[in-house]
Length: 286
Image 1 (cartoon, rainbow, N blue to C red):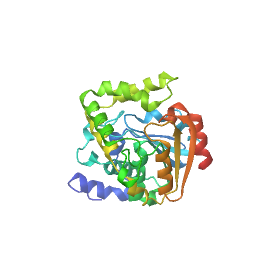
Image 2 (image 1 turned 45 degrees about the horizontal axis):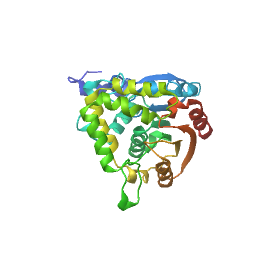
Image 3 (image 1 turned 90 degrees about the vertical axis):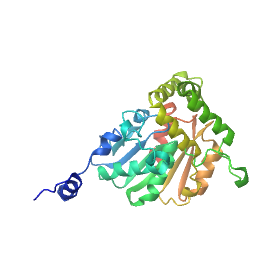
Image 4 (image 1 turned 120 degrees about the vertical axis):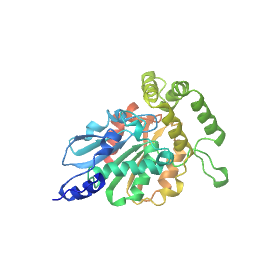
């Protein structure tokens, strides 16, 4: 075979021989574990977190599934230099990152497990390439955090609340993290959980975190729910200040073929606060 002159042509020439560009593995610190011949199960973490947040849940599926964990750019062990202001200015850009991971590792029939903002990122990815996805597990999803009174929509926050939150984050990210993480986590009787989330926030690149917060809290994906055709499980926590009950009801009502399960777990992170209940709910549905 005569080799082409430039790298792009080399990649194209080698593709029929099994070559795959592995750049997203480094970019998103992709980890592959579990049953290598099993159905792929992709775990996507929430805002300010990393793949370590799934350590109490993912192993329960290792015998049956091929587990794929990763870090969004700016989080965990991801390549910070891969952050792109234009691409990552919308959740759609993060969905493209996920699709590139699926392409790189030739993943099909995927069970996608997305927590918080990653729930909507997974929805967008499944709308773009539905043939790649078998099922979605949406943990604490919210398509819109801001209330829209004229549209009779309750997201849990007034616009002024979100503006204040973002201003506070911009002026003192570490202070914001130590204040907000325990509120997001809930479970005040277990302060170690809030401390873990605080530490996770503090490990995230602050400049990227500030930008990702705006993308997260200002996005509106309500119309996207209506486009989804992949079966979805919605896991709704009790006393979740980020995604309250009424939001879970909205997601269920506007997502065709979805199943809503209300957990006894409180707060916004059942993958840490109630992993056994989360695992049981997922296995029962799957």
